[in-house]
Amino acid sequence: MTSSSALICDTEAWKALKGHVEDINKTHLRELMSDANRCQYMMMEFDGILLDYSRQRATVETMDKLLNLAKAAQLTEKISRMFNGEHINSTENRSVLHVALRAPKDAVIKADGKNVVPEVWNVLDKIKEFSEKIRSGSWVGATGKPLKDVVAVGIGGSFLGPLFVHTAIQTDPEALECAKGRQLRFLANIDPVDVARNSNGLNPETTLVVVVSKTFTTAETMLNARTLREWITTALGASAVAKHMVAVSTNLALVEKFGIDPNNAFAFWDWVGGRYSVCSAVGVLPLSLQYGFPVVEKFLKGASSIDQHFQSTPFEKNIPVLLGLLSVWNVSFLGYPARAILPYSQALEKFAPHIQQVSMESNGKGVSIDGLPLSYETGEIDFGEPGTNGQHSFYQLIHQGRVIPCDFIGIVKSQQPVYLKGEMVSNHDELMSNFFAQPDALAYGKTPEQLQKENVSENLIPHKTFSGNRPSLSLLLPELTAYSVGQLLAIYEHRVAVQGFVWGINSFDQWGVELGKVLATQVRKQLHSSRTQGTPLEGFNYSTTTLLKRYLE
Ligand code: F6P
Image (cartoon, rainbow, N blue to C red; front, side, top):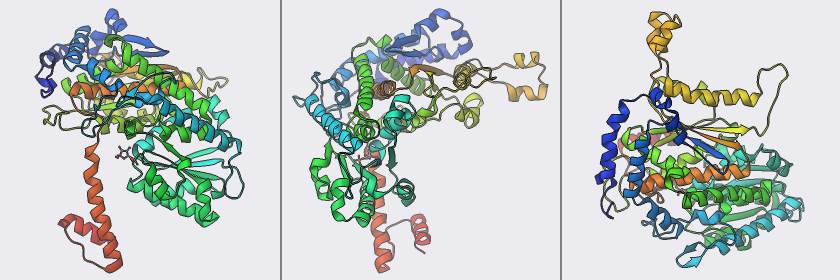
């Protein structure tokens, strides 16, 4: 076991895995895949989701050793501490309770001794009522017209999760039907081009702006909110803010100061991390405005189902735990620094960008939770694109260049199937043929001997050889609905937490984003004084001074 100040790399369990790498290096995935018992062991199902991790460079022995590592890292205790509302985000002295956001009404989840579930449901009920008013047209804008379009203004965790869920469900037949005649847009970047793109074609008279910011101080969001406030008041007068602007925040005092009626503010709590906030009003409000609360409630239920699985299932059958342990194996022992997230679903095009923040902001850390410098890397570089688009972009590197463990995510039933007469298979079957083929191409590769048998000319054989032995895992979902999108989200959230728990870091703070913000403040001040008073630039190095001068010219 690790004592509170020891690093996990000093444990016997870690050392055993280090030693085990040599055994794995002697085996090719081709051999591992020929063992049907092993493959059967590495497949499991929960609530309709099938996980197959047989194409990981791991054996049953590896899994035993990883489970020992979980024990050494006190994973069971850490998961319980999270669900029990202990202040596991120690640098901010906060609980980490995003699981409470999707808990059933009768659940009891405590933060600082108080059951938070009733407060969560108060806000959910308020969202339900408000979104019904907007959607039914009983709440109208300043000129008496119903509000059919919504712009959600927010960045980072106040943007990426809601965008992912919106993009994932917008072509689901049920959600599509519920969103008829409505638009949901997201304004995140401070770039005025993003303002133009997300207000172009909208009429302020029929638009509701939802300002989403946990702190209500984020520079980009506040400037974008002021810009849209100006857009509304110029067209409709100052009093229109009351009808056209609402907010989601933990900082209700600043919401009021901004000029938004606190009655039109939807709260959440400091025990919800920004990147884990999509199940709070951050996601639930804009999504309920677009699709109606009942659809969004299904998303919450999907996430809650995985929460219960994560909390109560033995580790050898626990999907987020297994995924987390395998990621630790790939990063810390096999030395693979990246992970590709490859959904064979256009609807999941915003999944990798969301998980990028969840994973990289959580686990990209340089010290342990006790502040000790780490002698091992944590986190991985997450990136991804939907298949088959990615195949025509970066898969070359994945097949013949660097080894990057891949997550293949497939959907059994398409949201929008197409069957063309005369085609061999449906369009979805065509997509899924690639989903099934790619993992084997990576695992098996192609040998020079196979190429010789195919009469490939000698000079091309090195170029056409695929080394194989490239790990991946597959997740197969029955269909992509609000419910399964919730499941997928929670699987990845908990996987990231498992990795952080094993690495012994704090996955719930983000001090690394602060320095850039501070430096930008200094630049902002000098841009202002230089432009307004011609004050010379000072305090920057040669490079920044030269670039700034060119910009100011
Ligand atoms: O980028 C840093 C960060 O603090 C994220 O963690 C957060 O999601 C984002 O900024 C937005 O913060 P807020 O919701 O407070 O505007």
